[in-house]
Image (cartoon, rainbow, N blue to C red; front, side, top):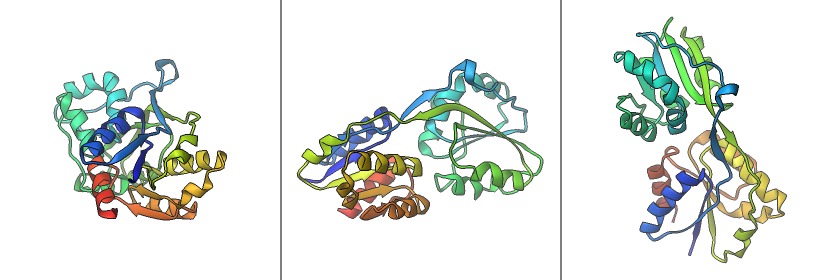
Length: 241
């Protein structure tokens, strides 16, 4: 039986693992990344939110780590527009009583295609995100005339991970990698342990951009999911098998 190797942070991987097991799949939870809130002493002050501002949450982690400081301002400005990058992020906001718009495609390109962001002119746009990441959203909104503030409230950490147990799995492996950073880290870990032969396994990624990166790194079969959501991953997996 094929084993699906889940590489996202522990809680995300455990949730998806349970869903896959209910569908009859065998899984191996192997997080290659953890998420940590940036300590207050290291963090930039939370941005002010004017009544006509637009606030974009780039992930559910941005909601979890950012709302403790931004929540009161959002509550004081009920007409302030809020956008979530995808359904999971929208649901996290809804649990806190905040309604958000969602693009049809859960990434920066999808956000930029939204009518609300087509002509921001001189509008204040606050992007709530993690450290690093892509610059496409901020740079393009700035080009369109928005006054953009990026506020990082969490960071991605890359622990050392023992990948040796994967060689004990006799059946085929299918890896999950939900971002370009995770593709790179996964490749680094496998190569560092002399397991480059596992690059012949399949890997499921969330976009054409990440698929190109995986192919350049030598992955044998790259499968593109519709986006980085659990549902999209499961659909791509079932279609592949």
